[in-house]
Image 1 (cartoon, helix red, strand yellow):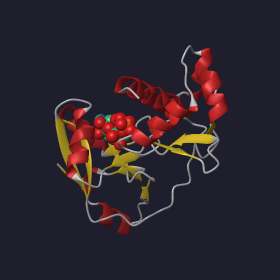
Image 2 (image 1 turned 90 degrees about the vertical axis):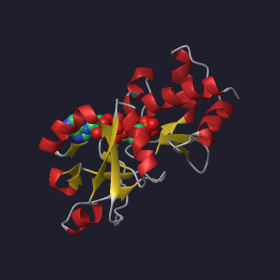
Image 3 (image 1 turned 90 degrees about the horizontal axis):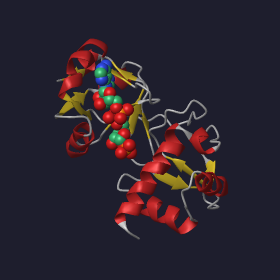
Amino acid sequence: MDTKRLNETSKFLSYVLRHEPQAIGLQLDGEGWADIGSLIAGAACDGRSLDIALIQAVVDSSDKKRFSLSEDGLRIGAVQGHSNASVRIQYIEKEPPALLYHGTATRFLDSIREKGLIAGSRHHVHLSQDMPTAIAVGQRYGKPVVLEVEALRMHQQGFSFFQADNGVWLTDHVPANFLSM
Ligand code: HQG
């Protein structure tokens, strides 16, 4: 399968499964699942031809394991990263490691010093387990910088942490006093 087609389809799936399912008349349930038949039909109305083999190839080749298929193979969902209000995945709370990392761009630092890390349009602040991943995340927005988050100390003080199936850590808000920058 050609890489360009896989990438384009992955971006399209991220868009409809995390943010704007209504753009193709698709419905997500509370856990973020969409019916694959409806996804293919909705995409077709949008002039995009998807089929099971292509969807399966995107799921299998996703470097960050962004999507998962239900066991019966009938539904697909994004594992994390949602902004859509109809989705509220019940992630299982988990004790985080001592430190987690957040990659961002230097131009956001002043605002982060003031407000801490905020989820913005997504449902959670996203944190990485390792520095190289955080650098790659930060690079998407400009000159990258990696902030260390004192995750375990936050957890001990009552903040909840969750880990998505693809390993990304999630929390609601990181006050600036738990960040080293
Ligand atoms: C920044 C990608 C100003 C934050 C990645 C980030 C990740 C603030 C941006 C996943 C701020 C939001 C999520 C504040 C946070 N003032 N800026 N107080 N607090 N920010 O894309 O974490 O490839 O919504 O640092 O790999 O960058 O899509 O979040 O720069 O896992 O699968 O506001 O998305 O995965 O940007 O990335 P995003 P993110 P995928």
